[in-house]
Image (cartoon, rainbow over all chains, first blue to last red; front, top):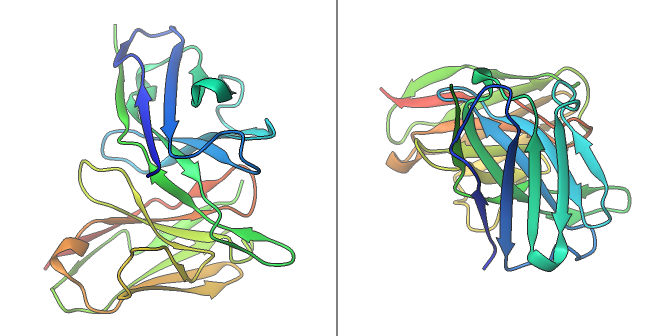
Length: 127
Length: 107
């Protein structure tokens, strides 16, 4: 059974750096083209994609947040970390991690979505 | 960035109704279009990937279609557990982007 679980501080102060950890089980971060992504959701608002990392260490970031984000993995610990610097009250949100699944591939493309997701962790930014 | 626009933003429906949600991309996403369901207080759940492929374990009343820049999610006969918010998401290019969501409410 594949599971993911987010952990980290639930309260951070403005200007501080947030470090979140996603611990996965049921799959290995070293498997070919295995990936994990981070998404967040402010209270009552829509989902926002943040970043992803693949087994070959290929990384990508949100355009608007890329100067503040860093993603990394520790394969031996089955963990993916997300670091967000200079936190602001507008960053208050539930942060989710999810596996990047591959449903099927054709000769030219692979298709899949984010599945499954962790339960999420609500991070509040307040002094 | 590819902008994803869902319509409507909300709708009211009754159990048994056929419901259709549309997602438009600002440029072609080449069938790399996924749909998620989110119930209140829960993590999103993948329903459809690759525009029309049903994720394992998802009821067959859910279906997806479309191509290019326009995609639809259809629920053929709405069930009580389907009242939720639905999101489309493109995985064609970086950064990945989501629609703003469509809330399906009880009529």
